[in-house]
Amino acid sequence: MEEDFELPTGDEMMMNNDDQLDLPDEGPMLKVGEEKEIGNQGLKKKLLKEGEGWDTPDNGDEVEVHYTGTLLDGTQFDSSRDRGTPFKFTLGQGQVIKGWDLGIKTMKKGENALFTIPADLAYGSSGSAPTIPPNATLQFDVELLSWSSIKDICKDGGIFKKILVEGEKLENPKDLDEVLVRYEARLEDGSVVARSDGVEFTVKNGHFCPALARAVKTMKEGEKVLLTVKPQYGFGEKGKPASGDESAVPPNANIQITLELVAWKTVTEVTDDKKVIKKILKEGNGYERPNEGAVVKVKLIGKLQDGTVFFKKGQDDSELFEFKTDEEQVIDGLDKAVTTMKKGELALLTIAPEYAFGSSESQQELAVVPPNSTVFYEIELVSFDKEKESWDMNTDEKIEAAGKKKEEGNLLFKAGKYAKASKRYEKAVKYIEYDSSFSEEEKKQAKALKVACNLNNAACKLKLKDYKQAEKLCTKVLELESRNVKALYRRAQAYIQLADLDLAEFDIKKALEIDPDNRDVKLEHKALKEKMKEYNKKEAKFYGNMFAKMSKLGSLESNKAEAKEAEPMSVDSEA
Image 1 (cartoon, helix red, strand yellow):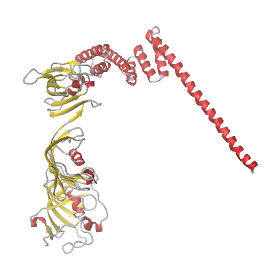
Image 2 (cartoon, helix red, strand yellow):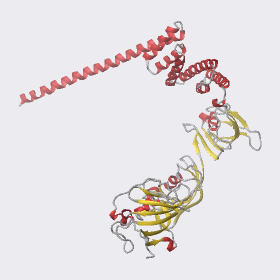
Image 3 (cartoon, one colour):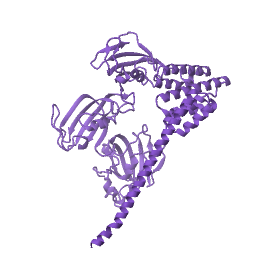
Image 4 (cartoon, rainbow, N blue to C red):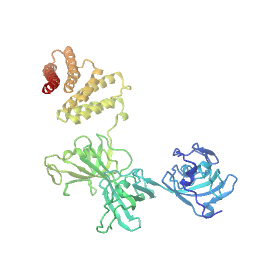
């Protein structure tokens, strides 16, 4: 047998097999000793030894195997085991016979299997002289020793990533996160162009070349990779001049980068307008977070942009700072951020003036915060006690909690804090939303609370110009009490703002039928009549102008037609 026997490339093998066979990623579920067909081309796999875990290699991965190849009569024609050297190749790239590319994709690390490969997936009608005759079915005893995952991370061949050391955790860094990496970049001739033993950067801002930011978004903490980078993700047609300790990169140069993701700090936008930003300095424990109404205990340092400390609590064994969330006991940005934290989490908050102290100067414990200041807090959530949720309450407690939230909402409404009041009314209704376990008396109390809270919430929504929600809340009330004058009145107000004047008139008239002397409804009816008159005038003017324009256009078209008819006559007369 020849010592330098090599499995043929895909081009050789495909001479007699132009069909591309695409298989599912998962191989057949086999027990040791069982044999099953893979796909529908006659490839069979018999499991000889179970592998480890669940992962299997994919196209593009570098696999390392030991194998022995025989004909069906048992004649051996090749063996990596006899040579004492494992065989390495890139899966799915046509470097081996098709039966191998398809079969080894189904194997786990450490697995040993016997593949029976028909000629169409092996050497076809030509065979491989002198050891393999034409149209030969082959058997390969294959053991998958290991593989290195190689991914085309941009799906355009621009960056290939080979994992050298597996990382930990499941998450990957996002655009806002700050990553700490080590890297070394080399040209194809092996010359080093850049290296760093530790550099920190924000992912979206990138560092060195575009490939680094692209790659770290696919990596886990502790992962080490080898990147093969094409010019479009390196330094392109212009290359890079030498600077400082970094050597020049020629134009259109491919680069190889060894990159390790040492650690990263998760950065999140607490508010949708990106004006409260949280950077996690130390991860917390578990999954629980404070809810609205929770009592939290924190270590807290507040600073201005120049580093001036204006607030400090819970440091150096001093008493922890305690507050209740959603009660306006602290600035809004701090209130919102703490409800995103886990116990033990340490974070740095950046809070814009809108969520801090606004446009006014504020005297704090240790210093004055100037107007329009962005402030910074280092906060550690030491502990918290969540406000009791409805599913942890009995029926008495639910009704009591709903009544309490309603009163809190009323106070906030009177103070002109309509958004906060709305949240209280919503929470009150949630406590008593499902009343199937309530007694008859409790159901009456729950209904009264639902009516009151939804009506008051509708008033909040009208103040906040959220007319669609106001209309929906009033409709909910009318489903419970069809003759509720306040609900008809407020829904009419919402309809007016939504320009549904006919619906508004219907509700107003119904309200007046129920309560003819209601002063507010009468005034709204009067205002509605004026609005409808105004609307009708505008509509009449609009259609009047439209018809006038149409008439004018018709007249112009008629004149043009007459002119066209007259034109040939004048020409004829001149002729």
